[in-house]
Length: 401
Ligand SMILES: Cc1cc2nc3c(=O)[nH]c(=O)nc-3n(C[C@H](O)[C@H](O)[C@H](O)COP(=O)(O)OP(=O)(O)OC[C@H]3O[C@@H](n4cnc5c(N)ncnc54)[C@H](O)[C@@H]3O)c2cc1C
Image 1 (spheres, rainbow, N blue to C red):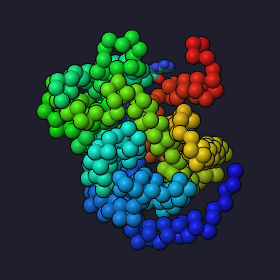
Image 2 (cartoon, rainbow, N blue to C red; image 1 turned 180 degrees about the vertical axis):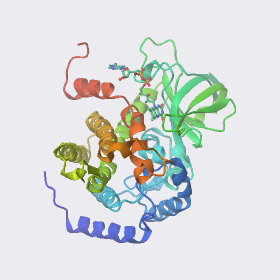
Image 3 (cartoon, protein in one colour; image 1 turned 60 degrees about the vertical axis):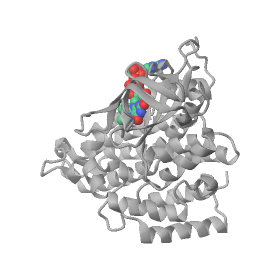
Image 4 (cartoon, helix red, strand yellow; image 1 turned 180 degrees about the horizontal axis):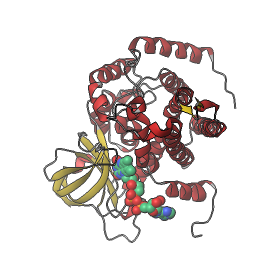
Protein backbone atom coordinates (compact mmCIF):
# COMPACT_ATOMS: atom_id res chain seq x y z
CA UNK A 1 0.00 0.00 0.00
CA UNK A 2 1.35 3.46 -0.93
CA UNK A 3 0.80 5.96 1.91
CA UNK A 4 2.34 9.02 0.15
CA UNK A 5 0.26 11.85 -1.33
CA UNK A 6 0.68 13.58 -4.71
CA UNK A 7 1.64 17.31 -4.89
CA UNK A 8 -1.99 18.12 -5.85
CA UNK A 9 -3.27 16.23 -2.82
CA UNK A 10 -0.81 18.03 -0.55
CA UNK A 11 -1.94 21.38 -2.05
CA UNK A 12 -5.53 20.41 -1.31
CA UNK A 13 -4.55 19.64 2.30
CA UNK A 14 -3.09 23.13 2.57
CA UNK A 15 -6.27 24.67 1.17
CA UNK A 16 -8.33 22.78 3.77
CA UNK A 17 -6.07 23.98 6.59
CA UNK A 18 -6.46 27.60 5.48
CA UNK A 19 -10.24 27.19 5.26
CA UNK A 20 -10.34 25.69 8.75
CA UNK A 21 -8.23 28.55 10.10
CA UNK A 22 -11.00 30.95 8.97
CA UNK A 23 -14.23 28.98 9.37
CA UNK A 24 -13.85 26.34 12.09
CA UNK A 25 -16.48 27.36 14.69
CA UNK A 26 -14.43 25.59 17.36
CA UNK A 27 -11.43 27.88 16.79
CA UNK A 28 -12.57 30.09 19.65
CA UNK A 29 -12.37 27.10 21.98
CA UNK A 30 -16.00 27.24 23.12
CA UNK A 31 -17.00 23.98 21.54
CA UNK A 32 -15.93 20.40 21.37
CA UNK A 33 -16.45 17.41 19.16
CA UNK A 34 -20.15 16.95 18.32
CA UNK A 35 -20.58 13.51 19.85
CA UNK A 36 -19.58 14.71 23.30
CA UNK A 37 -22.05 17.55 23.38
CA UNK A 38 -25.25 17.43 25.37
CA UNK A 39 -28.40 18.63 23.66
CA UNK A 40 -28.55 22.06 25.40
CA UNK A 41 -25.03 23.10 24.35
CA UNK A 42 -25.67 21.81 20.84
CA UNK A 43 -28.80 23.96 20.52
CA UNK A 44 -26.89 27.01 21.84
CA UNK A 45 -24.27 26.53 19.14
CA UNK A 46 -26.68 26.02 16.25
CA UNK A 47 -26.27 29.49 14.65
CA UNK A 48 -22.51 28.93 14.45
CA UNK A 49 -23.00 25.43 13.10
CA UNK A 50 -25.33 26.65 10.34
CA UNK A 51 -22.69 29.24 9.35
CA UNK A 52 -20.16 26.39 9.23
CA UNK A 53 -22.46 24.31 7.01
CA UNK A 54 -22.97 27.29 4.69
CA UNK A 55 -19.20 27.92 4.37
CA UNK A 56 -18.65 24.22 3.57
CA UNK A 57 -21.59 24.20 1.16
CA UNK A 58 -20.18 27.15 -0.80
CA UNK A 59 -16.91 25.22 -1.24
CA UNK A 60 -18.95 22.13 -2.28
CA UNK A 61 -17.39 20.27 0.60
CA UNK A 62 -20.70 18.99 2.03
CA UNK A 63 -21.38 15.79 0.08
CA UNK A 64 -17.80 16.11 -1.15
CA UNK A 65 -17.82 12.95 -3.29
CA UNK A 66 -21.48 13.13 -4.37
CA UNK A 67 -22.28 13.80 -8.04
CA UNK A 68 -22.14 17.44 -9.12
CA UNK A 69 -25.53 17.33 -10.85
CA UNK A 70 -27.27 16.95 -7.48
CA UNK A 71 -25.15 19.66 -5.83
CA UNK A 72 -22.33 17.46 -4.52
CA UNK A 73 -18.64 18.20 -4.96
CA UNK A 74 -17.83 15.39 -7.40
CA UNK A 75 -14.55 15.02 -5.47
CA UNK A 76 -12.25 12.02 -5.25
CA UNK A 77 -12.07 9.63 -2.30
CA UNK A 78 -8.46 10.50 -1.40
CA UNK A 79 -9.26 14.21 -1.20
CA UNK A 80 -12.32 13.34 0.86
CA UNK A 81 -10.12 11.40 3.25
CA UNK A 82 -7.70 14.36 3.49
CA UNK A 83 -10.62 16.70 4.19
CA UNK A 84 -11.94 14.43 6.95
CA UNK A 85 -8.46 14.02 8.43
CA UNK A 86 -7.86 17.76 8.61
CA UNK A 87 -11.32 18.49 9.98
CA UNK A 88 -10.69 15.84 12.62
CA UNK A 89 -7.25 17.18 13.55
CA UNK A 90 -8.68 20.71 13.88
CA UNK A 91 -11.53 19.36 16.04
CA UNK A 92 -13.99 21.07 13.74
CA UNK A 93 -17.64 19.85 13.68
CA UNK A 94 -18.82 17.20 11.23
CA UNK A 95 -18.81 17.99 7.51
CA UNK A 96 -22.44 19.11 7.39
CA UNK A 97 -25.32 19.28 9.84
CA UNK A 98 -27.83 16.89 8.26
CA UNK A 99 -26.37 13.83 9.99
CA UNK A 100 -28.48 10.93 8.68
CA UNK A 101 -29.15 12.77 5.43
CA UNK A 102 -25.45 12.87 4.66
CA UNK A 103 -24.45 9.54 6.16
CA UNK A 104 -26.98 7.20 4.52
CA UNK A 105 -30.24 8.76 3.29
CA UNK A 106 -28.54 10.91 0.62
CA UNK A 107 -26.37 8.04 -0.71
CA UNK A 108 -29.46 5.78 -0.91
CA UNK A 109 -31.47 8.43 -2.79
CA UNK A 110 -28.56 8.99 -5.17
CA UNK A 111 -28.40 5.24 -5.85
CA UNK A 112 -32.11 4.36 -5.99
CA UNK A 113 -34.01 7.65 -6.41
CA UNK A 114 -35.72 8.99 -9.53
CA UNK A 115 -34.25 12.13 -11.08
CA UNK A 116 -37.08 14.14 -9.50
CA UNK A 117 -36.38 12.68 -6.04
CA UNK A 118 -32.66 13.44 -6.34
CA UNK A 119 -33.32 17.08 -7.25
CA UNK A 120 -35.98 17.44 -4.53
CA UNK A 121 -34.20 15.78 -1.59
CA UNK A 122 -30.44 15.99 -2.02
CA UNK A 123 -29.83 19.78 -2.15
CA UNK A 124 -31.74 20.48 1.13
CA UNK A 125 -29.59 17.82 2.83
CA UNK A 126 -26.45 19.57 1.61
CA UNK A 127 -27.73 22.98 2.77
CA UNK A 128 -28.82 21.53 6.16
CA UNK A 129 -32.37 22.72 5.52
CA UNK A 130 -33.94 19.33 6.22
CA UNK A 131 -33.14 16.72 8.85
CA UNK A 132 -33.90 13.03 8.37
CA UNK A 133 -34.71 10.20 10.73
CA UNK A 134 -34.70 6.45 10.08
CA UNK A 135 -37.77 4.28 10.63
CA UNK A 136 -36.51 0.68 10.54
CA UNK A 137 -36.81 -0.87 14.03
CA UNK A 138 -40.12 -2.03 15.48
CA UNK A 139 -40.97 -3.52 18.89
CA UNK A 140 -40.76 -7.02 17.36
CA UNK A 141 -38.16 -6.35 14.67
CA UNK A 142 -34.71 -5.00 15.58
CA UNK A 143 -31.83 -7.35 14.83
CA UNK A 144 -34.23 -9.37 12.74
CA UNK A 145 -35.26 -6.30 10.77
CA UNK A 146 -36.78 -8.29 7.92
CA UNK A 147 -39.63 -9.42 10.22
CA UNK A 148 -41.05 -5.89 10.23
CA UNK A 149 -44.84 -5.65 10.33
CA UNK A 150 -45.59 -1.94 9.76
CA UNK A 151 -47.76 -2.13 6.65
CA UNK A 152 -48.56 0.11 3.68
CA UNK A 153 -51.49 -0.58 1.37
CA UNK A 154 -52.01 1.00 -2.01
CA UNK A 155 -55.01 3.32 -2.35
CA UNK A 156 -54.88 4.98 -5.78
CA UNK A 157 -51.75 7.13 -5.96
CA UNK A 158 -51.12 6.91 -2.19
CA UNK A 159 -49.86 4.35 0.31
CA UNK A 160 -51.84 4.11 3.56
CA UNK A 161 -49.51 3.28 6.46
CA UNK A 162 -50.46 1.57 9.73
CA UNK A 163 -48.15 0.29 12.45
CA UNK A 164 -45.35 1.34 14.77
CA UNK A 165 -41.63 2.12 14.74
CA UNK A 166 -39.38 2.43 17.80
CA UNK A 167 -35.95 3.86 18.75
CA UNK A 168 -36.28 6.38 15.91
CA UNK A 169 -33.37 8.78 16.58
CA UNK A 170 -34.11 12.49 16.02
CA UNK A 171 -37.78 11.77 15.17
CA UNK A 172 -38.94 14.77 17.19
CA UNK A 173 -36.74 17.16 15.19
CA UNK A 174 -36.65 15.65 11.70
CA UNK A 175 -38.75 16.88 8.78
CA UNK A 176 -38.47 13.56 6.89
CA UNK A 177 -38.22 9.85 7.62
CA UNK A 178 -36.77 7.08 5.49
CA UNK A 179 -39.28 4.34 6.34
CA UNK A 180 -39.41 0.60 5.78
CA UNK A 181 -42.89 -0.92 5.43
CA UNK A 182 -44.32 -4.24 4.35
CA UNK A 183 -46.35 -3.93 1.16
CA UNK A 184 -46.75 -7.65 0.48
CA UNK A 185 -47.67 -10.16 3.18
CA UNK A 186 -48.26 -13.01 0.76
CA UNK A 187 -44.60 -13.78 0.02
CA UNK A 188 -43.09 -16.58 2.12
CA UNK A 189 -39.60 -14.98 2.05
CA UNK A 190 -39.60 -12.20 4.64
CA UNK A 191 -36.97 -10.08 2.81
CA UNK A 192 -39.37 -9.79 -0.09
CA UNK A 193 -42.42 -7.54 0.11
CA UNK A 194 -40.58 -4.74 1.94
CA UNK A 195 -40.75 -1.24 0.45
CA UNK A 196 -38.94 2.00 1.29
CA UNK A 197 -40.90 5.26 1.56
CA UNK A 198 -39.81 8.86 2.11
CA UNK A 199 -42.31 10.25 4.61
CA UNK A 200 -42.90 13.88 5.71
CA UNK A 201 -42.99 13.94 9.53
CA UNK A 202 -45.99 16.30 9.50
CA UNK A 203 -48.15 13.70 7.71
CA UNK A 204 -51.61 13.50 9.39
CA UNK A 205 -51.91 10.19 11.29
CA UNK A 206 -48.18 10.14 12.23
CA UNK A 207 -47.51 10.59 15.98
CA UNK A 208 -44.11 10.90 17.69
CA UNK A 209 -43.66 9.96 21.37
CA UNK A 210 -40.14 10.65 22.72
CA UNK A 211 -38.40 7.98 24.84
CA UNK A 212 -36.25 9.11 27.77
CA UNK A 213 -32.90 7.36 28.28
CA UNK A 214 -30.81 6.86 31.43
CA UNK A 215 -28.71 9.96 30.68
CA UNK A 216 -31.89 12.04 31.06
CA UNK A 217 -32.09 12.95 27.37
CA UNK A 218 -34.63 11.86 24.73
CA UNK A 219 -32.60 11.28 21.60
CA UNK A 220 -35.15 8.90 20.08
CA UNK A 221 -38.87 8.20 19.96
CA UNK A 222 -41.68 5.80 19.20
CA UNK A 223 -43.49 6.67 15.98
CA UNK A 224 -47.07 5.55 15.36
CA UNK A 225 -48.85 5.43 11.99
CA UNK A 226 -52.64 5.50 11.94
CA UNK A 227 -53.89 5.59 8.33
CA UNK A 228 -51.05 7.96 7.38
CA UNK A 229 -51.19 8.66 3.63
CA UNK A 230 -48.01 9.10 1.59
CA UNK A 231 -47.88 9.65 -2.19
CA UNK A 232 -46.63 6.73 -4.29
CA UNK A 233 -44.18 9.25 -5.80
CA UNK A 234 -42.37 9.16 -2.42
CA UNK A 235 -41.41 5.51 -2.84
CA UNK A 236 -37.61 5.00 -3.03
CA UNK A 237 -36.86 2.21 -5.50
CA UNK A 238 -39.47 -0.24 -6.72
CA UNK A 239 -42.24 -1.75 -4.63
CA UNK A 240 -40.69 -4.76 -2.88
CA UNK A 241 -37.11 -3.46 -3.37
CA UNK A 242 -36.87 -2.02 0.16
CA UNK A 243 -34.46 -4.67 1.42
CA UNK A 244 -31.86 -3.80 -1.26
CA UNK A 245 -32.21 -0.09 -0.47
CA UNK A 246 -31.70 -0.86 3.23
CA UNK A 247 -28.61 -3.00 2.68
CA UNK A 248 -27.00 -0.02 0.93
CA UNK A 249 -28.12 2.38 3.65
CA UNK A 250 -26.92 0.06 6.46
CA UNK A 251 -23.48 -0.34 4.88
CA UNK A 252 -23.19 3.46 4.73
CA UNK A 253 -24.49 3.76 8.31
CA UNK A 254 -21.96 1.27 9.62
CA UNK A 255 -19.11 2.86 7.69
CA UNK A 256 -19.94 6.29 9.16
CA UNK A 257 -20.28 4.83 12.67
CA UNK A 258 -16.93 3.16 12.11
CA UNK A 259 -14.92 6.36 11.60
CA UNK A 260 -12.16 6.94 14.13
CA UNK A 261 -11.83 10.74 14.43
CA UNK A 262 -13.94 11.03 17.58
CA UNK A 263 -12.10 8.11 19.19
CA UNK A 264 -8.72 9.70 18.50
CA UNK A 265 -9.83 12.88 20.24
CA UNK A 266 -11.20 10.94 23.17
CA UNK A 267 -7.90 9.10 23.54
CA UNK A 268 -5.95 12.39 23.53
CA UNK A 269 -8.35 13.81 26.12
CA UNK A 270 -8.04 10.69 28.26
CA UNK A 271 -4.23 10.99 28.26
CA UNK A 272 -4.58 14.62 29.38
CA UNK A 273 -7.08 13.60 32.07
CA UNK A 274 -4.65 10.94 33.28
CA UNK A 275 -1.96 13.62 33.65
CA UNK A 276 -4.27 15.84 35.70
CA UNK A 277 -5.92 13.28 38.00
CA UNK A 278 -4.08 11.47 40.78
CA UNK A 279 -4.31 7.86 41.92
CA UNK A 280 -2.80 7.11 45.35
CA UNK A 281 -1.03 10.48 45.33
CA UNK A 282 0.63 10.10 41.93
CA UNK A 283 -0.52 11.25 38.44
CA UNK A 284 -2.81 8.55 37.01
CA UNK A 285 -0.69 8.47 33.84
CA UNK A 286 2.11 6.87 35.93
CA UNK A 287 -0.08 3.90 36.93
CA UNK A 288 0.97 0.78 34.95
CA UNK A 289 -2.65 -0.38 34.96
CA UNK A 290 -3.91 2.88 33.40
CA UNK A 291 -1.01 2.99 30.91
CA UNK A 292 -1.77 -0.54 29.78
CA UNK A 293 -5.42 0.32 29.15
CA UNK A 294 -4.50 3.51 27.28
CA UNK A 295 -2.03 1.55 25.14
CA UNK A 296 -4.64 -1.11 24.37
CA UNK A 297 -7.10 1.59 23.27
CA UNK A 298 -4.46 3.24 21.10
CA UNK A 299 -3.76 -0.09 19.36
CA UNK A 300 -7.48 -0.67 18.74
CA UNK A 301 -7.93 2.80 17.26
CA UNK A 302 -4.87 2.40 15.04
CA UNK A 303 -6.16 -0.98 13.83
CA UNK A 304 -9.50 0.69 13.03
CA UNK A 305 -7.74 3.50 11.15
CA UNK A 306 -5.84 0.99 9.02
CA UNK A 307 -9.02 -1.00 8.43
CA UNK A 308 -10.62 2.26 7.27
CA UNK A 309 -7.81 2.64 4.72
CA UNK A 310 -8.53 -0.90 3.59
CA UNK A 311 -12.18 0.03 2.91
CA UNK A 312 -10.95 3.11 1.07
CA UNK A 313 -8.68 1.03 -1.14
CA UNK A 314 -11.66 -1.19 -2.02
CA UNK A 315 -13.75 1.85 -2.89
CA UNK A 316 -10.93 3.26 -5.03
CA UNK A 317 -10.99 -0.01 -6.96
CA UNK A 318 -14.70 0.60 -7.57
CA UNK A 319 -15.83 -2.15 -5.21
CA UNK A 320 -18.92 -1.48 -3.04
CA UNK A 321 -18.86 -0.75 0.71
CA UNK A 322 -19.79 -4.10 2.19
CA UNK A 323 -19.76 -6.31 5.25
CA UNK A 324 -16.20 -5.24 6.24
CA UNK A 325 -17.55 -2.11 7.94
CA UNK A 326 -18.98 -4.42 10.62
CA UNK A 327 -15.42 -5.01 11.87
CA UNK A 328 -14.91 -1.35 12.77
CA UNK A 329 -18.49 -1.02 14.02
CA UNK A 330 -17.76 -3.85 16.47
CA UNK A 331 -14.37 -2.47 17.52
CA UNK A 332 -15.86 0.98 18.00
CA UNK A 333 -18.54 -0.35 20.35
CA UNK A 334 -15.87 -2.00 22.51
CA UNK A 335 -13.63 1.08 22.44
CA UNK A 336 -16.43 3.51 23.38
CA UNK A 337 -17.45 1.41 26.40
CA UNK A 338 -13.82 1.18 27.55
CA UNK A 339 -13.33 4.97 27.12
CA UNK A 340 -16.21 5.74 29.50
CA UNK A 341 -15.06 3.19 32.09
CA UNK A 342 -11.40 4.20 31.87
CA UNK A 343 -12.18 7.92 32.29
CA UNK A 344 -14.25 7.23 35.41
CA UNK A 345 -11.49 4.99 36.80
CA UNK A 346 -8.90 7.71 36.15
CA UNK A 347 -11.09 10.23 38.00
CA UNK A 348 -11.19 7.91 41.03
CA UNK A 349 -13.94 8.80 43.51
CA UNK A 350 -14.82 11.91 41.43
CA UNK A 351 -15.86 9.45 38.70
CA UNK A 352 -19.20 9.07 40.48
CA UNK A 353 -20.17 12.75 40.07
CA UNK A 354 -22.42 13.61 37.14
CA UNK A 355 -23.38 16.81 35.32
CA UNK A 356 -24.92 19.33 37.71
CA UNK A 357 -22.63 18.44 40.62
CA UNK A 358 -20.24 21.38 41.30
CA UNK A 359 -17.26 19.01 41.68
CA UNK A 360 -17.95 16.92 38.55
CA UNK A 361 -14.77 16.72 36.43
CA UNK A 362 -15.27 18.43 33.02
CA UNK A 363 -18.97 19.00 33.85
CA UNK A 364 -19.61 15.24 33.93
CA UNK A 365 -18.64 14.73 30.29
CA UNK A 366 -17.23 11.22 30.80
CA UNK A 367 -20.09 10.04 32.98
CA UNK A 368 -22.47 11.09 30.20
CA UNK A 369 -20.29 9.12 27.79
CA UNK A 370 -20.48 6.04 30.03
CA UNK A 371 -24.29 5.99 30.35
CA UNK A 372 -24.65 6.65 26.62
CA UNK A 373 -23.16 3.22 25.81
CA UNK A 374 -26.34 1.85 24.14
CA UNK A 375 -25.92 4.43 21.39
CA UNK A 376 -22.47 3.10 20.53
CA UNK A 377 -23.13 -0.57 21.17
CA UNK A 378 -26.73 -1.16 20.00
CA UNK A 379 -27.45 1.70 17.55
CA UNK A 380 -26.78 0.55 13.97
CA UNK A 381 -26.88 -3.15 15.02
CA UNK A 382 -25.73 -5.08 18.11
CA UNK A 383 -22.25 -6.68 18.53
CA UNK A 384 -23.78 -10.16 18.16
CA UNK A 385 -25.18 -9.19 14.79
CA UNK A 386 -21.84 -7.70 13.65
CA UNK A 387 -20.17 -10.97 14.69
CA UNK A 388 -22.71 -12.94 12.66
CA UNK A 389 -22.04 -10.70 9.64
CA UNK A 390 -18.27 -11.11 10.00
CA UNK A 391 -18.57 -14.88 10.48
CA UNK A 392 -20.89 -15.52 7.57
CA UNK A 393 -20.10 -12.83 5.00
CA UNK A 394 -16.37 -12.24 5.55
CA UNK A 395 -15.06 -15.53 6.97
CA UNK A 396 -17.53 -17.67 5.02
CA UNK A 397 -18.50 -19.75 8.05
CA UNK A 398 -21.66 -21.81 7.73
CA UNK A 399 -24.97 -20.17 8.63
CA UNK A 400 -26.37 -22.87 10.92
CA UNK A 401 -23.83 -23.62 13.65
C1 LIG B 1 -29.15 4.91 20.69
C2 LIG B 1 -29.91 4.10 19.68
C3 LIG B 1 -30.35 4.71 18.53
C4 LIG B 1 -31.10 3.99 17.61
N1 LIG B 1 -31.56 4.64 16.50
C5 LIG B 1 -32.36 3.98 15.64
C6 LIG B 1 -32.94 4.67 14.52
O1 LIG B 1 -32.70 5.86 14.32
N2 LIG B 1 -33.77 3.98 13.72
C7 LIG B 1 -34.06 2.66 13.92
O2 LIG B 1 -34.81 2.11 13.12
N3 LIG B 1 -33.52 1.98 14.95
C8 LIG B 1 -32.70 2.61 15.83
N4 LIG B 1 -32.18 1.94 16.91
C9 LIG B 1 -32.58 0.55 17.14
C10 LIG B 1 -31.46 -0.45 16.93
O3 LIG B 1 -31.13 -0.59 15.57
C11 LIG B 1 -31.95 -1.77 17.55
O4 LIG B 1 -32.13 -1.55 18.93
C12 LIG B 1 -30.98 -2.89 17.31
O5 LIG B 1 -30.95 -3.23 15.95
C13 LIG B 1 -31.33 -4.14 18.17
O6 LIG B 1 -32.67 -4.50 18.00
P1 LIG B 1 -33.60 -4.78 19.30
O7 LIG B 1 -33.45 -3.59 20.21
O8 LIG B 1 -34.94 -5.13 18.80
O9 LIG B 1 -32.93 -6.00 20.04
P2 LIG B 1 -33.11 -7.54 19.69
O10 LIG B 1 -32.99 -7.72 18.23
O11 LIG B 1 -34.34 -8.04 20.35
O12 LIG B 1 -31.82 -8.16 20.37
C14 LIG B 1 -31.79 -8.51 21.77
C15 LIG B 1 -30.49 -9.28 22.03
O13 LIG B 1 -30.49 -10.51 21.27
C16 LIG B 1 -29.34 -10.59 20.44
N5 LIG B 1 -29.68 -11.21 19.16
C17 LIG B 1 -30.76 -10.97 18.41
N6 LIG B 1 -30.71 -11.70 17.27
C18 LIG B 1 -29.57 -12.41 17.30
C19 LIG B 1 -28.95 -13.33 16.40
N7 LIG B 1 -29.49 -13.69 15.24
N8 LIG B 1 -27.74 -13.85 16.76
C20 LIG B 1 -27.15 -13.52 17.92
N9 LIG B 1 -27.71 -12.65 18.82
C21 LIG B 1 -28.90 -12.09 18.50
C22 LIG B 1 -28.89 -9.15 20.23
O14 LIG B 1 -27.51 -9.06 19.94
C23 LIG B 1 -29.24 -8.52 21.59
O15 LIG B 1 -28.20 -8.77 22.50
C24 LIG B 1 -31.41 2.64 17.85
C25 LIG B 1 -30.96 2.02 19.02
C26 LIG B 1 -30.22 2.74 19.94
C27 LIG B 1 -29.79 2.06 21.20
